[in-house]
Length: 502
Ligand SMILES: Cc1cc2nc3c(=O)[nH]c(=O)nc-3n(C[C@H](O)[C@H](O)[C@H](O)COP(=O)(O)OP(=O)(O)OC[C@H]3O[C@@H](n4cnc5c(N)ncnc54)[C@H](O)[C@@H]3O)c2cc1C
Image (tube, rainbow, N blue to C red; front, side):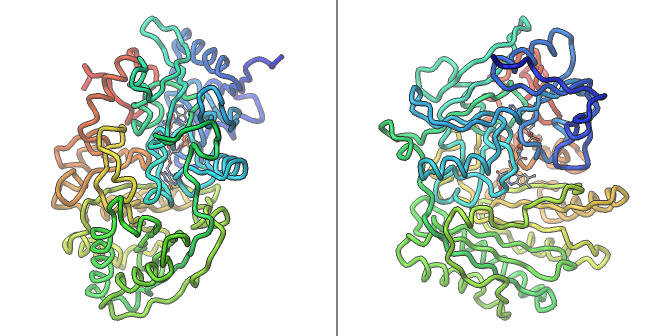
């Protein structure tokens, strides 16, 4: 018999460690943390919070960029970290992952058991709870799409309008009466509809009962290489050429049929204090002429720049599993405070945007080396899925940008926030400080949550935050919200709003 629902209160030695996630900017002060081990215990935890009128939040892997979990008003945190089983479910013919598992556990287990993977993020400690429901993007996305493109079903503990908590299973089957709840979890973000206790994965069209045929196989081996252009050699003209080349290349090589689908790249212009602009590349060695294609790509990016890049890490062939935690600098420091932003581009950065980026990165007043704009080549298989098939609508983009900085000293908060806000609003100055959906830019990514998008001081575009994240899919998400969480039990600063409150 299983023990009862574990509860940790302020007097407990475990309390302090359970009241913050990874980002040390946020700390909560709940009355208790519930640590369920079964779906029934999640139902119990939710039911008791609702019955006693206590605001709750849900923690998966604790990697939220904003205070959606650790908010001062939250009285009960449901921490899912003890539900992390990964197994094959023969009944649903799908690989089941519990809502508190981390990406590293999932990759490790499904690869070693069945030789398959999911195209999610490179940080092993990110939780599937928030990652999958937000879309899930990573090094294999150009090859295999987003994680949600392989999501078959979810089990979610929801609260009915009369206050009763219950578990609902929702699949992508056309005749499933709860298909809208499945769809809401294909990019609608965590913390809006209920507690995800289980995900099931199976690639659309996969047949049979052998788990090794139900999800994509990763590359056996990959080439990896890192190059760097030292800032002291990069004039504005050279920098512009480099970033423009990279954007042009992605415009030409990001269709779902491109031979370059097996290539993942990130160009990482960092603040001048960091010393250089980095390019990291990974390429599936099984692609015909993989090495040649990779070298052609490097030539195209450096064409006419006038600086020979230095090899930060020379070209290596590595087993995929060994390379999958790469780039290793995601390993986080436990004292880190951080602020991130995101943007999608349907075209490469324009010269005006590159000029703005150059200006802020070379600002001599800013001497912090951790600020970086990670410009990932996007598209490929991600763009094979239509914008309404999943809740994640960004399906014809070529670049995905992650803007971020981290620091340890609370006294540095204001300076760091000011700088990243200025950098972002400078590059997107012509569209109200944010990348509005238009011919060049395409909004933002909910999993790189950015509270500034709701603030008119930083978003003067007239395009509301929810349209930056979900574009035309927002009304359908609101309908799902009204159906599954009419009393708005699951809420945070950027949760899906009930239709009448918008
Ligand atoms: C170091 C780092 C690297 C990252 N790399 C990538 C990357 O490569 N690709 C990418 O796409 N994203 C990446 N992310 C972003 C990441 O996907 C999101 O921050 C994600 O929301 C984290 O999920 P979590 O469960 O770890 O976070 P949490 O802080 O636990 O939760 C995030 C949100 O999801 C909700 N939630 C969590 N679990 C559940 C659940 N079981 N049921 C219902 N709601 C739940 C929470 O309430 C909260 O609103 C990265 C983040 C970090 C910090």
